[in-house]
Image (cartoon, rainbow, N blue to C red):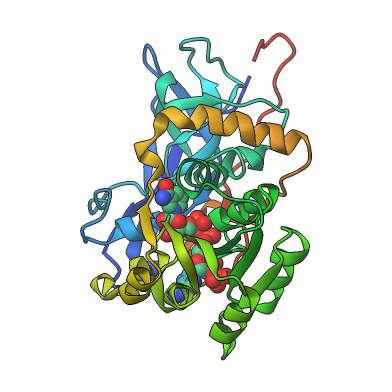
Length: 347
Ligand SMILES: NC(=O)c1ccc[n+]([C@@H]2O[C@H](COP(=O)([O-])OP(=O)(O)OC[C@H]3O[C@@H](n4cnc5c(N)ncnc54)[C@H](OP(=O)(O)O)[C@@H]3O)[C@@H](O)[C@H]2O)c1
């Protein structure tokens, strides 16, 4: 029998940050745990996945999604375990993923949950087989159209989404040049992820080193950050280049998101095209992308990267560390351990 706590803690939005969130941004609320009703299960959250979009939703500016309300629980993808209730074949013991937020327990309905197996390590269900890996896969497959021999540049190449874009570009036969914020990350991007070159954008003169790393120009630019670093890539675009805008971390972190620079002159001069991408628009592609990523992982062709922090209270600090470039791969926070499944439990 799984032990269930009496109370669950959750982080809610207390005040909106101007740029980066601080301790004053969040409050911890404690609520009694409610047992599931018909059609519901109670999920104990084991790992929460942090992402820059959580920061952008703390603020009140126009975006692809609505801001968190003051007092609202901070949302995020999680890995959890069903600990009570039965619904649609879900029984206690089953591991699941879903968007259940920064909290220790959550009630959920089966349509909110994806059942996961122990074929892969638990963290992989929040990395290669979840938003980071599937975003990189779908954006490249649907719009990037990687061509062997051509050059792709990836910003935040040691980052959660960027790290998979680097690897998928290499698997497609491209020359891949990463941009990253320190020397250790650059070593990881070339040695572990297989990029041909990684340019440290924190060092002066990175623009020249980037241009030198792309002698034929940049045919495909996979951009998750925006900002001046991304703008420097526009100076190196090849004729008919494609710019895939997957994220805007820099302007989302800023107090003036409206000042996001984009070198339109070079876009015009190179007859390049620009394509925005949001995974939320293509839910029907998700299952296929996950199957493909599972295949690549089974074959050992994909390296997963995560930065795992222990403890519910550490969640806001881990978000800040991610937003200030201190982490590599997906930032995950462990809230608890799974309960071993009993023998007579079919899950
Ligand atoms: N379109 C979609 O469907 C979709 C899906 C998932 C995520 N996203 C977006 O993609 C972006 C990346 O998400 P992620 O989870 O993979 O995060 P991430 O890249 O792992 O984390 C943030 C990284 O951004 C870089 N960064 C932060 N501030 C920067 C600055 N001022 N200048 C340059 N780089 C900076 C840092 O890397 P370096 O220091 O190494 O540069 C930092 O480590 C986010 O904007 C997210 O919202 C979009």
